[in-house]
Amino acid sequence: MPYPLPPYRVGIAGAGAFAAFLAGALAPLPEFQLIAVAGRTDEKRQRVLASYRHRRSDVAAPREYREAAELIRDPDIDVVILTTPPHLHAPLGELALMQGKHLLLEKPGALTSAALKDNVRLAAKQQRALAVNLVLRYNPLVEVVEWMLRHHLLGRVHHASLHNAAHRVAAGHWFWNREQSGGIFIEHGVHFFEVGRHWFGEPEDARGFAVTEANGEQSRVWASVIHRSCTRQDYVQETQVPTKRAGAELLHEYVPVQYYHGFTMEADAPESTQWEVHCAQGRIVLEGWIPQRLYVEGMLTAEQAEQIDALLDTVPTQPAADAGERVRAWAASRLSPSASMSDRASSSFVSRLPYRRTLSLVDRQGWYEAMAQARFLDLCRMIQDPNWSGLVTPDDAVSDLALAEACIASKVWQENGVQNSSSNQTRLL
Image 1: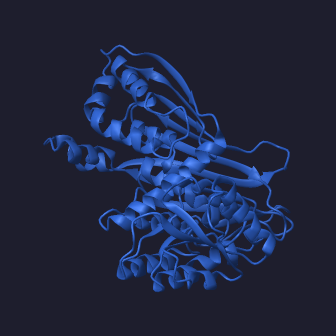
Image 2: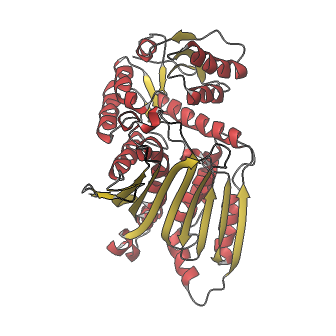
Image 3: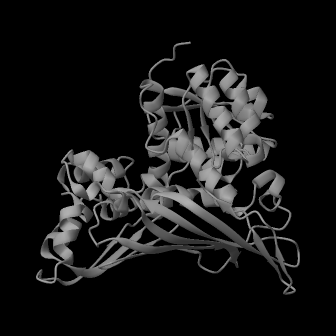
């Protein structure tokens, strides 16, 4: 069934706070036309519509549905955005695909990687575009870090950690019901696993841990993951230069990474999210759930410092949906292969000097909207080009969810000090 070129007629199923944000964030895009909203209460639906009309006052009134399935069956809708709780993603996503809709799923896309994979296969069979709303890699600072690591601009990566301290979620919210949310790693952690997999390589081993509070909530979880980097092999493929450095030893650069999430902060306390990456010649610190501050320090050669400076200078100062794409295009054409640079930088005869630089992005809300816009525009490209699978592909989303499943706690500590153990420590092959 052919679809017109944009604007795409979009229905948002699920009318929570994120749906309201998304309606407002996407409203300025000429590719986006909201024609329907589904939500259980008039108040919630009106909040989504108000957010959209605030940015697009010259549009016809979108339709309102109480049930998501009613919206999905609307024959005038081209694209369904599912912003319901996670346990509804898989069944409603299947319905949307069977109805011939293109589909943007809020993360995680399903409660299990198997269920999400089934819908990815169904999308291919139906010739519909499917994407999961994993937005962090559309941030230019995340893209910058990926290129620094990929090209070993601070030498080899040896260790990294992610610390995410978020506000408490109200007791009784579906977030705490694992049958509806899947738990913190599945509902929330997939964002960071998507980044980790692309920065450090695919996971080889994952073990998860949790603390259960007296009320039964697991508000603090953490995981230890061993990633295997294949960066050097990528360079050989990109440069197509025969080299002995493509040997097996370079395919086994293991990076241990710790991921911590705590939904423990009081409402008036500042939240904090921070990546810290330790390399042979320095470290990289990236701050913010919506990344806004990047700090780089190390002992670098003049060539390394020049390339990092030039890379950071490509980041736009104002929010832009194509910011990450600009960084990616420049880096792909201008950065030199890392293998030779790492060799030169490690030589005892090469002069190295202290390097420090901080890059900050202002307007957090603007950058969040830009990232959401970039994800939607990527879906539009998938609709128009069947050969394009997205910057964050459906297979990426399946892999992120599989890693989240592997990190479900194998050891749990109760607040009374009793330690429980289970045997679901998982090795990823």
